[in-house]
Length: 139
Image 1 (tube, helix red, strand yellow):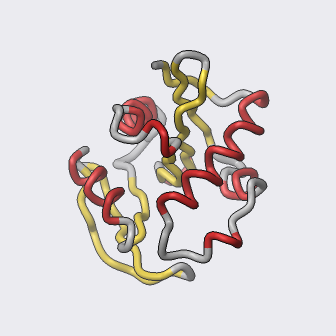
Image 2 (cartoon, rainbow, N blue to C red):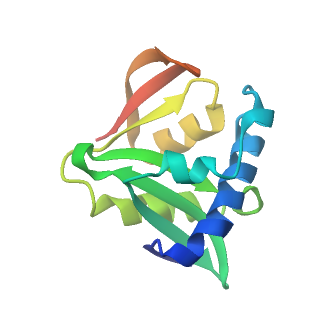
């Protein structure tokens, strides 16, 4: 598996991966409102890293670099628990100019456990348009 920079040829497969991953993970949301084009909107202006293995795209991460904010980290449902998320986090590290932060929905218990296992800690709980979330930081 490699983690590399996004290129335009990745856009169509990443749209489908983002849609499938959100539908699988966000069981508390109105998943019928999710669309493939959400990827373009939710990563606009961000640095995108892609995890690839055996010619397949396995996941991606996007970073809002001015704030060292990990905005998205998604792994295709077929490739979870195989080190893809860890590899993406490791690839992101060199793009953070300050201690990184992220938001994780309180309902997303699997993601919260993953981030905790990777050294991220909740700073505080807040409520956004999609419900309660934790602002987390890497220490």
